[in-house]
Length: 146
Image (cartoon, rainbow, N blue to C red; front, side, top):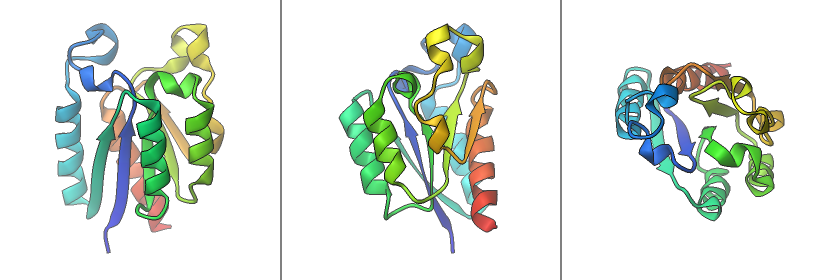
């Protein structure tokens, strides 16, 4: 039986490859998704992707995920530091959660050092670039095998 994982991406991640290439690199979100799908196929994982710039859409997706998926990987973007509502939605979830950031949020502006969702996460991956997505899939798959 395949583990079903949802990867949720928050605001501005749809512009990866265009924005702040010195921080985020030149790879697009679509390319990251394609790499993740290849990894998932080789490792018997079903992976679904969702991206929104709208906080309420992310909350709805998290709420809908609670009975559909075995795990959640979330890069909440700027909402990581500001959204109590996304945090509250994640608190309802009873599956492993991996918090993911392309950059190291602790090497950036001081306001980014505080994550409202870290205390709910099973694990956190940050600062490892786009490869963090594959690492997150591998980590959550290993957690689910135990």
